Image (cartoon, rainbow, N blue to C red; front, side, top):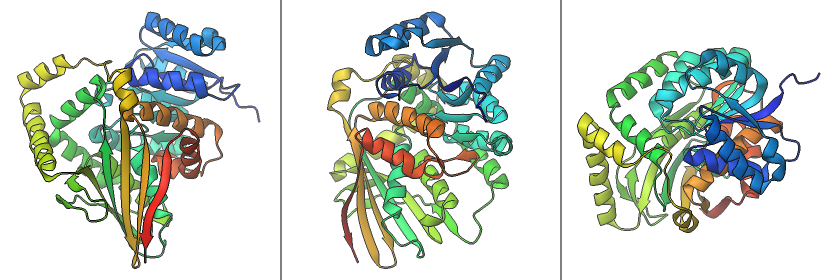
Length: 392
């Protein structure tokens, strides 16, 4: 049967910082014949972006541009009905993301975003998961550095362990480089809404079914020294931890009782202590609106680390897993987290559009929706998944 969709992929928000990285990656790496387009609010900015992409691939001089506002439900519905997959890099998602996701869920259109906002993810599950299940849409959040290396890294680590025993896994993230304006705004706004976040968690828990006959739990750990990685660990119970826990709930390969904890790793104890105080200071500042607004004004959205800063930056995420007396130490590593986000967001969309992935629908994770196919794509793009050590 002929596919009625005119387009394979539409990128919404390509003129922002990470959106430009995603568009540039697609210009360089999209397979021949991919039918894709750019969408956004300001046509002149889209035209300027298209001109830059055409310098990479001259055929993109004719790339379709679609003008659409983030709150125009009619235009968003028309956009969603034309394409197989929508990529959105328009944040903060809590403020701007809901109408586009709703359009995709209703139209049966696959959706990927960059969000690291737990409240947005939970509220979208409550509101749109059942609609997406009925339409067949795959709604995949956190397809950037949050949380692809962590989600697929845990998926890779679990593959090294027996699936008939309880599995305990911890992830230890380290990264260098700078912070974009979009990330800073999302983090500070999320920190100002702790009560709303807790309410969203409760609302989701009231409607989300637990796996049958097995258990998957995201567990917030305590600061401690890790004898396997050699790092001091600061608990990071943010969206990465929750996403891995949801993959564990969805996939039987994570064993009958899966427990995951996520940390930031520091080489020296004083750095960990300083980081803890820094997190506390940000949380406190976010509660005071004038202070929060002042901080937000200092870091404009659309800004980000320079090319020089990103060229020198790297990340690693170590995973230590235990099951049935066996221990495994694996690692995912790559380049600057923002460059990684451009790659993972684009490849997630390409995988949904082009790969023969497992059947699923609704709000799903990258491991659940794309697993092996996405991991192979990222390895081909230069991300490393490796076993560091194991013992019985």
